[in-house]
Each structure stands twice: as structure tokens, then as C-alpha cells.
Length: 584
Image (tube, rainbow, N blue to C red; front, side, top):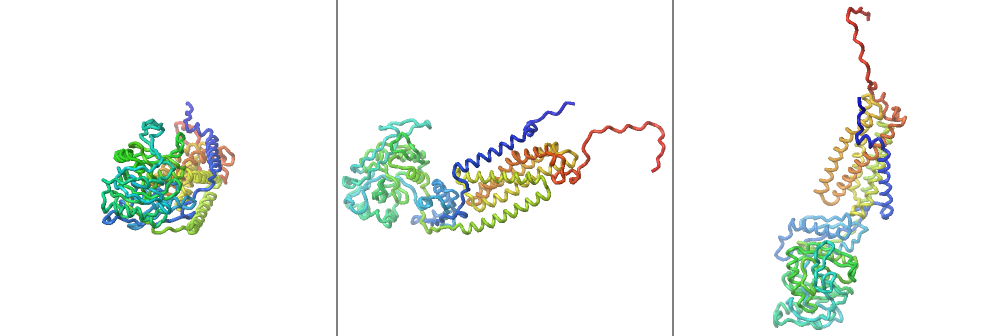
């Protein structure tokens, strides 16, 4: 009779040392990476580390009170969450409270001031043409009669210029993405201090005696952008289709005031924006914008008009929350994509890109309150949770020692390996993807102890069943593995599926629980396959376990094993004939 062929599984298990070496190398690599990156502890969420909580109240334009509805509030929550996370703020929470309020929780240890500024900047984003601009405050030059037309002529003496990306003349250039960069916007560090000296009004656009133009001129003359209270009310109540006044800081951190034309492009027309280091550009950091198909047409139309004007009427202002965050000017019509470059550093470029990408909210919001959250309450809850987890773990250990005896060593070592993998991954995932450990995540890790212990018990019981049927330990370990493996995989798949569904359909802290549960479930499969099974295979070759010592947990007599399975001869049939009766 031919000997049975060894399958791939049998061949792999003949050398269990490889699997053990693999998982130990993985633990060593993760631990080394954790120390090399300088992140030796997991990042903590706001409930454990404390932080800042901001309450925002939704406000509608006069006559548009119906705009405050669930759809717009949910959209605002999504945009604010992306805006805050775009700054690298991990485990931030953005959720509605009631019908008009949004709560933003920002954990401690992040740039909460910048995040607060970005979250508080909640108005819609607009691109408006610049009509007149000058430095604001003491020493400002007299204000000219403004023009309400985007085609007003004038020369501010500004030295800013716009050229296509990578070229000094309007010509497209190919990029590594295989597309043409149509044009570039360049913002010079020189402020438009003399814009008002040479700007001249357009008589056709601003006829004498025009009430709206006179009102706008009076507002501009009275505007002092160095005063916070004045800046906060500049342009209040002005519709996007009307000209307005606004304030903004130039690259020298000086306040400038503007007269801006009607909004030509909305923030929703910006498809994406990102800060990019451009080694070929002397300015260094740039902001690249991509427009939607409709936004590209609008942007091409307005920049085509502005390119025909002299400074400052060839500038357009990026206005967010009534404040000019950037005012580059153009030299030729732009469409599709654009590049804003100038005196940016990395922080300012990323801030502008974040505003462009996440600036268009369906509602305006005012800041109701800002409070500092103390980690004391969360720390007390964490302490109670850890005590409960320690009690549960102690009960599991006692059960394993009493019931499985020597086998409990394998289970405890497997739990330690699982804990090491979980801790190192959590520490590395903090800076990598912004994962932060909160109270629900701690609960998920505690629940995972039971899931991991359940996998060990399934395998141990399969091995003990094989021994009860009369097999020795080494073949029992191999015969029990296929059936135990199927059960473990099915059980872990159900747990992982529940965690994935919970992560998708929930928000906030519950996602931390789901993420941790899913992560530890995957690690359970890794530990059972690469550590528990190979370790038991090796220990089965020792006398203590292989001979079924009474303290090994695999004693055949204690398990009520049947006699060993042997192939025996059939007894010879008695010869035919009378048989003498025997006395009992």
C-alpha cells in the first residue's frame, strides 16, 4: 500500500520553526519602527487626553430660514470634518446637536488654534475680481472713487505677474501626469500699497449720483481693517451677486482693504486643491487647483476679462468668511487647473489649499462657545475599564490554568504575542493614519481578549477529541488542525464583518470601537496560524506533552481516551462440529 502524499499544509507544518521565526521577526520590526519613529505610545483621543470643544450655531440669510435643514447640516458636518482632518488633527469629532448646532471636539496635542480658525471660518468661498485695494489703517492714502465694474482700468504699480507653469510665456507644458497645465497664477510678496493713488474710476460703470456706488464708496472710506470689530462686519448682508468691501492680510502681515466685484466663481466649483513643493519654482511651495467642468468655464471667463486690465483690476480675490485669504492676479485666461505661487511656506500653502478644498459650506455659522475638555473624567473611566479588563483577563488565565494545565502556557504566550502586535500597531497607526485611542477603542481591545481565547479553546478541544479517540499527541495535533482552522476562520470572519459594518454605519467614537475590534480580529488569525499552531506542533515532540503527563492537560487517562487504534487479526473461526458446553 503506497504511503499517503504529504500536502502543502503537512509540508509547512513539518517546519513550524519558520512560522515562529516569521512572527517574531515581525514583532521585532514593528517594535524597532515604533522606537525609530519616536512614537512609543498610542495617540489618545479627546476623552483620554483632553482638548478643545467648539460649539457652532447655524445662521441663515434673511428670508432663507428654510436653508437650515438636516441635509445642509449633514453636509456642513462632513465638510468641517474633512477640513479639520486636513490639518492632521486625528480623532476629531464633528457632530450635530439639535437642529442648529454643531459640536467640534479637537484632541489635545494638535494645532487646535489653527483648527479652530479653520472651523470657525465657515462662510462660503467665492472668487471675486479686485476693483480697488490699498493698505488699511493710519497713513493710508486717500480713497478714490471706486468702480463697480470688473473692467475698470487703472494701474497700481503692482509688481505681481502671472505666467503659465514652468514658462515665462503663455504656453502649456506637460506634466508627469500626462496632462497640460494650462496656466499659473503668481502672487508676489509686494503689497499693493499704491493701488489707490493711480486707480481711476470708470465713469460708465459708476455714474455720478449712483446711490449704490456712493454707499460702497462711503463704506470703503470708513473701513479700517486693523480693527477686529470692523473686519467682522465688513460686507455683512451683501449678496454674492453684488460688489462688496473686504479685508485681508498681505504677505508682509499688513492689513489691506478692498473693493471687490460680484462673485464670479463659487467654492463648489473647485474640485480639488493641494500644496505642492515645486523644486523648479524659485518660490518653492505652490498651491495647485483643479476645477469642475462648469467651474473651469467660469474661471476661464473671468480670468480672460481680468487679464485685459491693469493692476489691481487684473487681480481676483479668494474670499472666505468675508476675508480675502489670497489675491493673485492673472496675465492670461486660465481654465481647468491653476497654480498659485508666491511667498508661501509649507504651513501657509497647506492652509490655503485646505480652505480652497473644503471652503464651500451650505450655511454660515457663528461661534457660540469654546471650552477646554479635561481628561480627568475620561481618565477615571479608563481606569475603571482597565480594572474590569484586568479582572476579566485574570479569570481567563485562572480558567486556562485549571482546565488546560500545561496547554495554558501556549494560550498565555499567544495572548502576549497578540498584545505586543496590537500595541505596536496602535502606536504606529497614530502618526500614519491619525488613529487615536479612545474609551470605546479600549473596550474593543478588551472584547478582543475573549475572541482570541475562544480560538485557542476551539483548537485545544479538537486536539483533545482526537486523543479521546485513541490517537497519540503528534498525529492528533495535525488531524485536529483542519477542522479547528475552519471553525476559527468562520468565527473570526463573522466578528470582522460585524466590526466592518459597525465602522461604516456609525460615526465618532463608536468607529474607534469597531476599528479596534476589526484590527484585533485580524491579528487573532495571524497569531493562531503563525504562533499557536506551530508552537503546539513543537511542544508535541517533547516528553512532557507527547507522553501525556498528568499536568500537561493532555493526559489520555484523564480525558477518558479509548485504547490505541491498532490493526489486529481476526480471530480464527472455530471448526465445524459439536462443541462441549462449558460451565460458567
